[in-house]
Length: 242
Image (cartoon, rainbow, N blue to C red; front, side, top):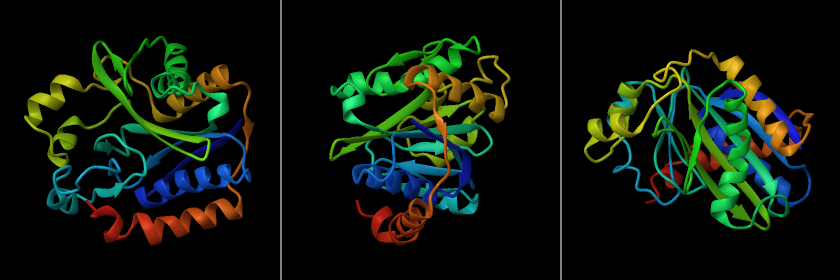
């Protein structure tokens, strides 16, 4: 499996890259791939089926330089804090993963679980698509499948600003709901910087998928990603479609 080194970019290009990798994997132009990245500036991603206005506080986001983007995957709204969150992405053939959706979520999550365990942090998989630490959510993931290929991506909150998350997201019973359900590594007493976290996550993924081949984005991958970013993910038609 190919490993793409950590990147940081805006939400539109981040989502463009994930879809580009999915589409080119379908055409067998790239191999199975995993990567880690951060959204810069901080960004909210909403699930494919969500309504934008009921998922985020658009005015607050605009005032505070927080981007927003719709994903091609399902699931709920996610606050990607540049300073306190790492996102992982896996593009893999269905043949290398359990076909059952629940089992595939847990299998692909295995790299995150193993990476954290190597740091002495024991998280638990909570169906359908969360990881919990001390019974609180620390990671959520979303998935889509197309032509035999799986795209799964998800967040890992190591020092996410929960107060900022509360203000940017629209959630029923907001403060009580988020603070009751969500945690971060730092809130649970683990002081880990982003570089150390990514290093250990990479090792965890390799323990699950086997030794990786370090790669880099090809011109075709980056060109398609930029096209998707600016023609699709940065468009009002896409983000406000529901």
